[in-house]
Amino acid sequence: MSMWMYDDILEEQGFHNLRQEVKNLEKEYLDIRVQLRDTETNLGLDPNNEYLKAKITYLKKRQKNIEEKGPRFAADYPLEMSLFGAPHG
Image (cartoon, rainbow, N blue to C red; front, side, top):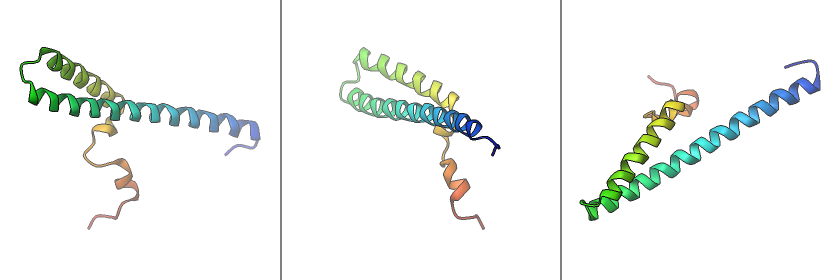
């Protein structure tokens, strides 16, 4: 916490910008996972469709790219569980 109100406003704006970036990344990741699920279902109905195979490959690359940017997306348990969940033991 700083002495000047204007310093707090700048810090708060940076936090809001970061939060918006994370929201956009989460939204994109969810969209990719839904598309991937639907495309894999469609590929099960038509296993010889080359377009669907290429789309799955593309979506998996995009998903991996987002997981590298934010490794918490690929985690088995959400970060919130370790911070706010019940203690072990």
